[in-house]
Length: 144
Image (cartoon, rainbow, N blue to C red; front, top):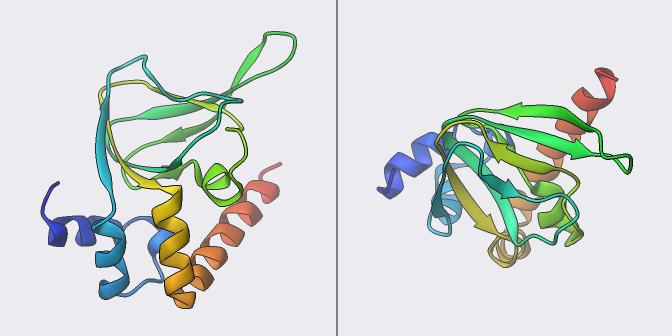
């Protein structure tokens, strides 16, 4: 998925970016880095710092939370067009869960500095992403 137009088309399917126009999506696409993870490989690690967010372009991954007693719980599953890592990208804090590839998984990574620059330069991007994140939080709370 290397061509900018292919990336833009794919990004229209990502809920986080659903309110953005073609120009804005091109700005995001130009900053994405492609990464491939093998089955069983940790993509991000709970408690560690992170540098950005991830959009799954192919494959499957799961978010796993480890509790202080050593027990683990799968808290989310990700497939193509799903995203994760947005909390760390916004606040710079540690990862709230580990994400593990369950099969070969390709991700598009948007670094925190690039993301913050985009939001600073285009208030509409910031506004649309804030709305998308609020919707995600609302859905998560409703399922509790």
